[in-house]
Image (cartoon, rainbow, N blue to C red; front, side, top):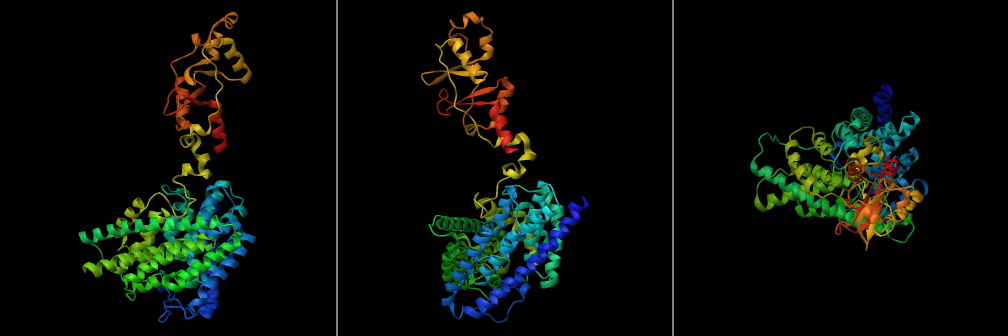
Length: 568
């Protein structure tokens, strides 16, 4: 217990915190050489990272940006596909996939992800730091789980808390990081077992990271007290949730369309991030908000220095396109940060536009922050951790109620599709949890996937014909079919009641059972099993749903047993 709930989480937290520190230093190193030195772009920074008084709105040598991002994509692609192909693309999704499919993540994958993502972001690619550090943290957890010689289930928990510890450090949000380690793997469920060790690992990684970069929240803003929300404010936050839900659908659709486009391209995989990077560089050169992680631009909105709704709306579109081409092409990075960026820009555009059109005096920084978490909650299907995140981002609970309103609307109206395709709905849908559910898995499996082609007899065949068939095939019953229609079933029990000398004379139609118990191909194995138990039969004819007499298969208890063995 001590090893599981204290020693291991502390080791994971310290390691994830150190990797987060190294990751930030690596990004800053590449940024200083490429973006600042070559491109001539001094990006704005958020308050928690030492906000700059002076920054460059447009890169001095903007025409070089597509080239630097393309070269960054090329280097990233070569390193990724030659050393660690599993670390390509969205870091968080790779960790989610490893969690569900019981795959091990290596420390090598974490190191490759650290280097390639630092190159991607530092050369100007539209990407977030949270996705890569999630995979890095998950890799650390998976590696330490093996070193500690943990059981498979415990290694899965170690992977999960490593993911949360990485996000906790990089986002300076220990509570949200711990909760996301339990929530992000599912769209509609929660892994409660990761919470306690997740708290310890996340607090530890946050402390390690904070000792180097400080403990201030990433963003700083004066949030007014919202003790008594007016009806107009509630309606405005409801509207923001609706707008974010629409933005989620557009963002997710765009991202996966671009991903599909690059996946179908007939070129070497390491060249795809270079091509995607070039397009992302063009987008960033046109709208600088889409360069790098862009958090400094959100800080400008929170400080009241950026108040043009046209620019913020263009920024939201640019970040959608930039991250779709940067990461959708197979580049290294994450969509966590860009999702937050898009949400903040959507929230700012929404409130600025309403203020400008109707003069209702909405507090733009509040809507910007609520937009950040509302869009991410809809895109990642992680509403609880994002609600906690809003308190840690602002240092208080003033926006908790408005966020609950907006996040709920965004989550429920944004559709079933997640930005993380490896997510599953619930634990029963996860291969990693099947051994915990036993027969419940039968509720998810369909008869059509396990039924077999039926052996049949006809009503005018002799009983001996059916008996010989059952003996030869070692089965206990045979469907009786006439003109392609199911008319009955004859079992070994029906036959052995007859004298042996009569079996050559008596026809099957005289002894078959016509009160049939059937099932449809789209029914679950659980329903088939319940019917078998309640009716005392070992097999069921499977009939077409539209034509209840057309036989399409047979399902036996042995088939159900095979399904259970496959998934347990």
